[in-house]
Amino acid sequence: MHLAERPLGYDTRFGSGWISGVFAVALAALGLGGVLCLRFPSFLTTPDARALYPLDLVRFLIHLLLVAGFGLGALSIVLSRRAPLGLVGIALVVAGALLGGSQVPIEGPLETSRYLGLDWFLLNVLVLAMLFVPLERLFARRPSQPIFRPGWATDLAHFAVSHLLVQVTVLLTLVPAALFFRWAVHPTIQGAIASQPALLQFVEIVVVADLSEYAVHRLFHTVPWLWRFHAIHHSSEAMDWLAASRIHLVDAVVTRALAFVPLYVLGFSTGPVYAYLVFVSFHAIFVHANVRFRFGALERIVGTPKFHHWHHATAPVDRNFAIHLPAIDRLFGTLYLPEGFPAAYGIDGHPVPRRYAAQWVRPCRRGR
Ligand SMILES: [Zn+2]
Ligand SMILES: [Zn+2]
Image (cartoon, rainbow, N blue to C red; front, side):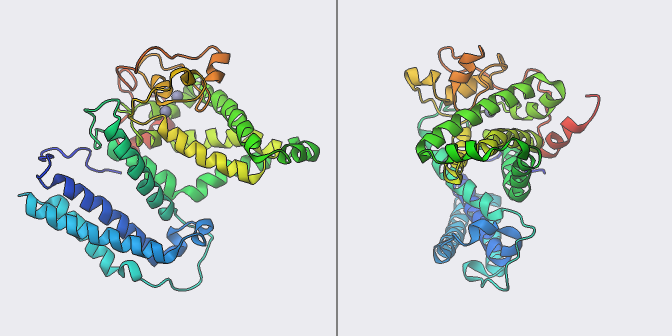
């Protein structure tokens, strides 16, 4: 996948039309994505989520996105002499309108056999961007790092593909446990665990899952052919919420599938497991964010941006393997928490290619 990496050659100051142009493209693209979901719901929406959508509100939101995209696109054209961003924004809105706009009727029975999670991607990108972009502007660890820093398009491609393929990744995460570890299940143990209070189960899940995540993560660092996959994640030279998504699908699926095995065997209730899934997807992004928050003594107990930023430091990278609980690293002698944040991120020598497609195939090539 090839997308423009940087707005090179643009005047990006306030009043230049760049900010309105970027917002025009972003909002119009979200609006167009929403129209596509309404137009092709069988193929572009997640079956489990369909029943939960307040459809009138969704249509209204899509309408607002298209109108705002058009208005900001027009503003950008007026403000800037060269107007590609504004024009792209308006073109996306026109495409959305031609496809039926926010009021396009949903027709026919919906299939559930094969689908892409476009709705899942759009919702996540909307919510996370609304949360983290202002947070990283207000409390930046590196204030000079722009939103569209080098590598943003590659990371957005990782983010998009992993969300679009949600059907495949969820299946690959859940199936191995049921397939290979059914023998380890014991109804008495499962009954005892599932009868505990939900909050206690949630805390236990965090501990159990992070112990597995620690082990698998450490393995990805020590076994050379596994490191080839995990190196993609470590190739980010800028830390922010989007950098969290730069993970090879093999890395993501293997880690999740193995972390799920003990949860499956122990038989935790679905409520606390779902709560953990929400928690991990937020926390794993938060620890990558470009924020300077400090948490005092808590930093040695709970995973913070500083804790995980040190894991991404050019040196020493083989530390801080846990996601949620630095206490696990402390237990195994791999905790590294000096004062402040690391000066540089990434891998010395830049062995990982910068383009998305090249990152996908690199670990699979032999002899490199
Ligand atoms: Zn790592
Ligand atoms: Zn990371």
